[in-house]
Image (tube, rainbow, N blue to C red; front, side, top):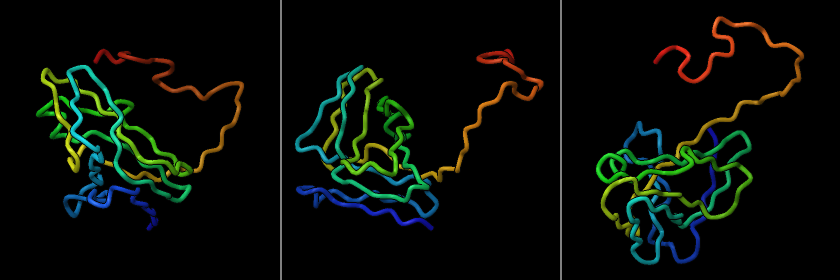
Amino acid sequence: MFQVLFKRLEGNEDIQLPNKMSEWAAGFDLQAAVGEPVILAPGERKLIPTGFAMAMPAQLEAQIRPRSGLAYKHGITCLNSPGTIDADYRGEVKVLLVNLGQEPFTITRGERIAQMVFQQIPAIEIALADELPDTVRGAGGFGHTGV
């Protein structure tokens, strides 16, 4: 088990720290720590604060992902998704939201706006090679299977 430390930023005592909404949920819901309602017009993107900073072990990354309900009902999703928070970042966690819907969407203080999923980072060694092993697929890329 990994320990992740959270620091609630000043003026955000009313904002919940990330929490799971069910026992088996993979993601921790994040709340908007906006000072006043933020209107996100269709096609518009804004960086929304969460009111906390965190510290996690070097073996972890945190991924910021959309909430399915906001995406389905309103067209609100996260850009740069999943967004990666590296273990050495100590600033406020913010969520880059975009309105892909057809109506303006208002983000209010305390509203659940995204989810954060933690992933373990494997140890990787980069090695230079003159040749790569052959596979059946080879260099087939985008759409090469006809799908």
